[in-house]
Each structure stands twice: as structure tokens, then as C-alpha cells.
Image (tube, rainbow, N blue to C red; front, side, top):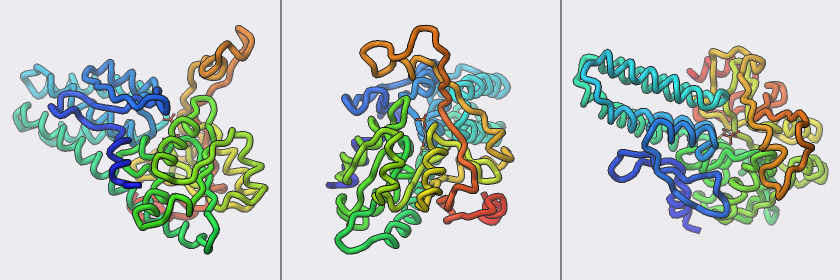
Length: 364
Ligand code: MRU
């Protein structure tokens, strides 16, 4: 498998060649159809984030940054004041799309600073700086996930035994589809391929991830496309897998990490961590520093997105699978207590408790 060719095929977010629109893979259609769509208006970009056509914390951040560059490039404002006010309105609008992944707010803040820092320059130049900044956010994300991958790969190397595959469990999709290139939770596996490992050296068990099936539809799609041995199981089968000794290590992503290390990630992640503790399996959160929110003291303060009940009762089914009118609980994320996390793999190193101290020392 040519790993670079694979990454080209699954590049989540890029600009169209004329740089006037975002060009994304519509992830709601995967794995059946790999279709790219272009988004040029603020409404199209907002809708794509809200509906998870583009998703995963880092990819949401990159999309918001390019979404600012593309939309503000068409601004007809003649004064800095009008231009900045137009941006602030756009920033508020994008920020209302999804509440949990902090990368969205992080990227919008960086774009805000870019405008303010260049306020004395002509508006046509500020527009160029916005594109350069969005390019930089994307390029940085590639390097960040590479670093996370190298650290995760060193953990895999420690587990490697002659003639035995390494069993890895992951939840949701923190893969190349969710970032600019390597993913976070999948980066160790892709880096392993780059270092010459065979896909069969690893066996990745992907939780299907109810209700939106990111594990079944996206993670198993991208890992198996890259030639890595892949199995999909329903979320409630993870316990049995762990008990039977098939899982050596767990890597998951995150949407927002609080200052004490509590980590919000796709609903179900905290259950995986509790099981991992019970069975003595190392549980690692792969966290780019853009996802670490030192302004949020603990997981209790992380806003959790609540989504449409239809995702639980109707989506994916031929007919409705719960009685009409029944109450539905559909949080998109949960928070894993920091005490359950073996280590946090950031681009700046493998961090351990106490996390507030570790973040400070790593200059996060
Ligand atoms: O609702 P989603 O699909 O955007 O949730 C994604 C996740 O929970 C990922 O694990 C997280 O964003 C990390 S992506 C590198």
C-alpha cells in the first residue's frame, strides 16, 4: 500500500484550485460513496460542520479557518471597522455550529488575532493574511499529528512480539478523516506503516460508535483502505474483546481536554476507559494542544452537545425503532475522568498526571 497515495485519496479538507471555496469529503456519505463537495457560502460551511459532513475536532478547526478566509475574501467592506464587524458576525455564526470541540473556537480566535494584528494594513492584504493563517493551521496540524503518531508508535514498538499482532482498540473516528493528515488516535498506526511495518502487524478493533457510526463507517473504512487489519464490533462488545485478551492498548481522540486532564470525546469513550481500567489495559488519549483548553478547569464545565433524537430512533433503520413520542437521550460526547487515563499523547510529549502541571511544563 502506498501510504502517501492513500492520504491523498482521503484528504478531508482542502481549498478548490481557485481558492474560492472549501473542498471537503462529505463524510455523511461514507463508506458507500467518496464524494467531494465544495462549500463557498457561510451557510454551506456552517451546515457542513453542524451535520458532520466535516467532523473531528482538528478538521472542524481547519474548516472554520478556511471558512473565514473564503467568506471574508468576498467582503465588500471599505473600512477596517466594517471589515472587522463583518468578521465578528461570521465568527459568532460559525461558533454556534457545534459546542464541544474546542478547536472550532481556537481556530476562530487565531483568525480574529490575524485581523487585529494587521489592522493598519489595506483590507486586500488582510484577506491574504487570512488565507496564509488558515494554510498554517492546516500545515501545523499535519506536523502535530505526526509527532503524536511517533510517540504512539514508540508505545506500539514496546508491545511488539515476534509473530504476534498487536491488538488496538479505538472509539469513534480520530483518523485522517478527522484531521489534516494522520489523525490522532490512528497516527501511531499510520506512522508504523511509514516505518515499514505491515498492516497485519496490527489489528485495530473499531467500536462502531452509536449513534452516528463513525467507527464502522469511517475508521474501519480508512484503516482497511490503508491495508491495516481491521475489525468492527458493536460498542457493547468491547468488554468481551478486552476480557479475551485481544486488546493490548487503546488509543482515542478528544474534543476538549480540561485543565485537570478530564477529556471529552465521543459518547461511549468514558465507558471504554472504565472497562480498560478493569482489565488493566493502557488507555491513551491522543490530544493535540489545540484540543487542550486550560481555561476550562474540569470536565464538569465542558459543554456537551445534545443532538437530534432521530439519530437514535430512525437514522440507519428501515423503519422507526422506538415508539413515537418516547423520550430520547442523545448526548454526542462524554467526559473521561483524568484518573482513568494512562497518558495523554500530545505533540509535545507523553504527559502524565498531574495534568495541570504537565500542561504548564509543556508550555500548553
Ligand atoms: O461528533 P464527531 O464525529 O465530530 O466526534 C469526533 C470525535 O469524538 C473525535 O474522537 C475527536 O473529535 C478527535 S478527532 C482527531
